[in-house]
Length: 135
Image (cartoon, rainbow, N blue to C red; front, side, top):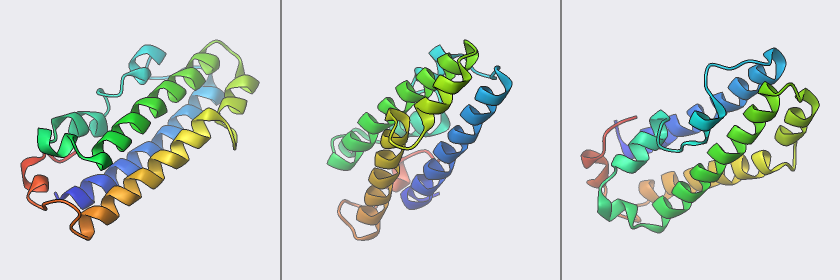
């Protein structure tokens, strides 16, 4: 899989997190603990991100996506903590438009699209994608 396709898959995966959190809010239970949700290296994308070559990890694209991805997981864990504690309205508020979760989700999606666009336009060597493990 190419870097372009891996980034597309990451976008899909983080959209799935929104649905996962909405289910946790509705059900009051989840298949993951908040502590695990907070870890940015346990999801498929996080493992892929950390496995990229060091040269790529020094790029501004990687740094931005890495930082936003870590923030995303912190916000997801906050929502999950609220949901599992039975604070449904607070959890919904924590995911609502303008919330920390919403803002970091939007920023992460934009950064991934920017990285994908940079890859398509050759802002860094394409052979990085050959060294990376697909997610």
